[in-house]
Amino acid sequence: MSFIAITYGYNQYSIFNTNVSTYPLLDNVVTTCLDEILNLLNSKLPIWEEQINNYNNEEEQIKKNMKKLETDKLSSEEKTIENIKSKESGIINNNDNINNKNTKKIDSAKNSKNANSKFEKIKNYY
Image (cartoon, rainbow, N blue to C red; front, side, top):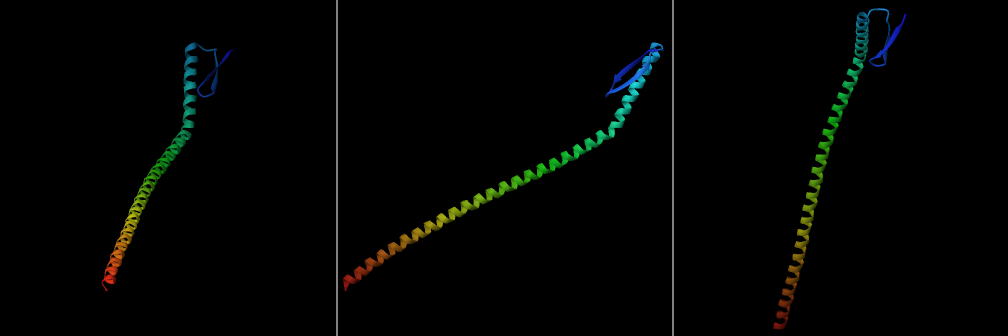
């Protein structure tokens, strides 16, 4: 009696008796191998579905995090732009205030010169 060992699928094997005619042997080999491969795949199917669901959930979380980060980045950029604008307007206002102070000093200096000259004229008159 002779036997053959056939390996197939995912590390699967079967042993068959060769003391039969060729057609029934091949038919038995094909049906046995296919049935065992399908049983193995069906037994692993829930595991694969669970992994796919986990990956889909992770993908959704990553997308949500990316959207949140993008909105945070945009809002922080808007805040920095507003801060820059407010600083620029503050600098402009400071420059205006400094210019106003300088013109007031110049005006007061002119007024004091005018007053001194008027005082001199009055002093000289008497």
